[in-house]
Amino acid sequence: MERKSSVDIFRLLAAFAVVILHVNMGDISYGKVLYIRLLARFAVPFFFIASGYFFFLSYESSGDKALSKSLVKLFGIYLVSSLIYLPKAIMQNTLRMDETIVLRGTGTHLWFLPSLMFGLFVVWYVVSYVKSYKMLLLNLLIFIVPVYLYYYSDGSIGKLTIDVDFTRFITSAGFLSIGMLIARFKINCSILSSLLILGLGVATLFVEMSILKQYGNKHIYDIQFSFSGMIIALGLFLLSLNAFNNTYLGNIGSEMSLGIYLYHPLINTVLFNVIVHLSGRYSGIILMFNPLICFFGTLFILMTLKKIYPKLFAVLNGELNLVKMKKVQ
Image (tube, rainbow, N blue to C red; front, side, top):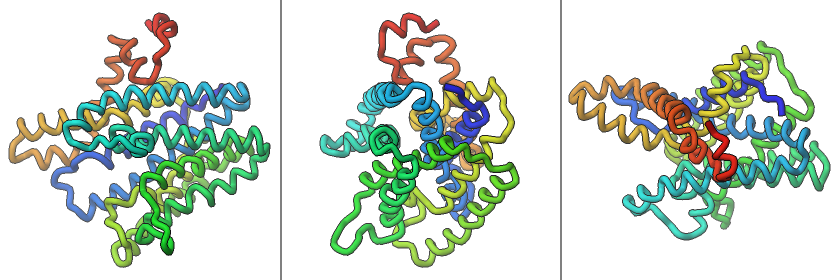
């Protein structure tokens, strides 16, 4: 399967956006933080779109084996990361032995993994059994609309209550479909067109923010999917297809972006306490750069693990095959 290093480079940008969503930003004003975090909401849609794009490339070359290979890999990552976050969930009394453990694991941000597994199965079924890539367009309605109905309503349609965990779980199928359609029909916008889509997304963000402030039924912090985020994600992905290629940065994006997504909360907990303890009254100023500190701190630790403890790094990335692990140098 041919990968595009430029897309993997942009995955690092998306990983940085995820960090922005989860860390304290110190003395940056509350109003600015709202805009910054709403802007960063492009991250998860971008990851899903990129995953759909690469899944098509894999499916094109390997057929149905692409699904089993992806699901085994993702389940390994889901299992390992859930075990890592299990002690924290027990200590914070957030562990729930019900459908929640399936929908989001032991950490609230781990929902991305089961959602991605579900979405890959859906898009695979459509292209393998329905045998119609155009039918993927229907996924946009079936799997994305409920998400926006949840976030832009009171969480219900008539007497039907919409659950946030459920909406997040199913939304991947819609965004994966976008990535697959881009790959299947070789959609290739110019840099200018991609920038125009990106600009439209940013403009939509300001309109969306105004509407949410005045009429929104949910706090802006709680909006995990936004119209602007979807448009920005699409613009950035199309831009990434024509952006510069750099093998070194592309490899980092390919190998580290998911790890940053999964494990930055643990690194941030340590770094945050160190910053507050050492800097005292100046901690608010230093924490303004906390997204960068956490991002590069997590990246450094992951790259160090890969170099010094490659087997541990392989386990963190879901490689549970002991035969293959013996080959890791």
